[in-house]
Length: 82
Image (cartoon, rainbow, N blue to C red; front, side, top):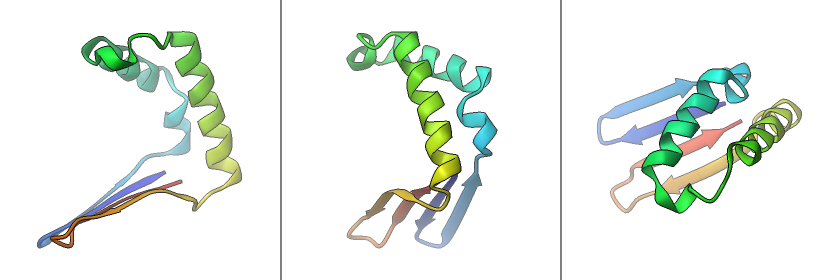
């Protein structure tokens, strides 16, 4: 997975290895994030685990698929690609 941000005079690309999608580290980050975001509090850890496993499978099967592409009026671009 790759997150790319183009803003004003800066470009930032953050590569995320596919093995990190379904890892203990990611699960712990999500658990901490759920505590801080009440709108996701009704989703249990088992559901998140199933989501991450499925996302890891999709990342292998559809490598290069663009999940997010957002452009602002200022010309800033954010992309998330598997």
